[in-house]
Amino acid sequence: MFRLENVTYEYQAGVKALADVSLHIPRGCWAAVIGANGSGKSTMARHLNGLLAATSGRVLVDGRDVNEYANVQQLRRKVGIVFQNPDNQIVGNSVEEDVAFGPENLGVPRDEMRRRITEVLGMVGLVGREKADPNNLSGGQKQRLAIAGALAMQPEALILDEATAMLDPVGAAEVLEVLRRLHAGGMTIVMITHSMAEVAEAELAVVMANGRLQMAAPPAEIFRREQELRGWHIELPPVTQLGNMLGMKGCLSLDELLTRLDVGR
Image (cartoon, rainbow, N blue to C red):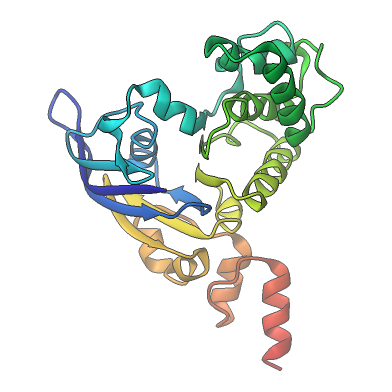
């Protein structure tokens, strides 16, 4: 789905935010991108739907260079993005107006637009809130609304740039449940996160540091390399740290740790 080939991105002052990054994220994959602040993870993700353009190298989406798409809007319909603060993405006076905003701007016929609104609100668990004022929603509901707005454009992939960072545990859990359902349906998900618990949900963990790709592998493999992660200011989940201390390296959950301990007896 996504391929970066030797991508470098420089700010006008000549500072490199990305340096020679090459990465492949297959279609249907759930990828979690991690790294300390300033590591380049958000900068890298924003190349995937044309929000930023590489200084050098190539970014391919579905095998096509991003520069070959007819326009940036065509690319952004294929690749939706949800940011950290849902308030910055809400534009409608009601839930249904907000979801309709993108399709309406594309000239989607009204009957089709109504069908999309019903479909995506069902996907994110907001059926029955169509007339609600978005400002009265909880943080988790607002973020699910932002996801619904992206889904109404019928993307093939969804990028979430620290979309759970401002949410309480309940709101974050609500968003993760939506993502699990979308992924089960075949959607490609790229999730930038500081939460190692969220990384455990992914199939591919991508580690960024100092603008460079350091590792890309399944989370269990990444979590085995504790000393290297600490060097990049990345802390493992407590259950993984405990598992590593007990010689059960790479555990992603308490259930997995307990199972492996039982097997070892």
